[in-house]
Length: 124
Image (cartoon, rainbow, N blue to C red):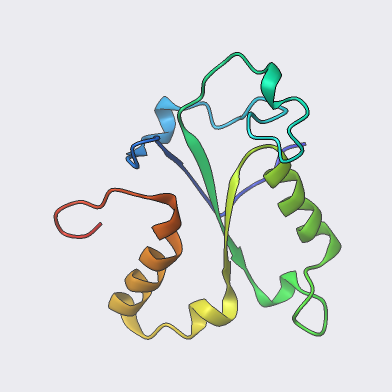
């Protein structure tokens, strides 16, 4: 199965964003850090790059109540997670509440902080 993503980037173990063209965007399956731990110990290759997918969650990605993802979107997120991608959802309510570019940049920095990214001299 292949999916189109909103934004994909690769992060090294030291927190540096790597050029995607130098990375294989397709992960081997099953991922090294399998949640159940069944197959993870059998992996002999070391892949230092972490693949991160920023996912815009638009209004039409949800059921009528706006709380539950549509089945196709939920399945897509589950598949990407099981394939080893780090998923960072960006809900439409949060994006729409940002006023101007400085506030949006601050919001994105906060969302990306758990990845341990190294920021440039001007803050990204």
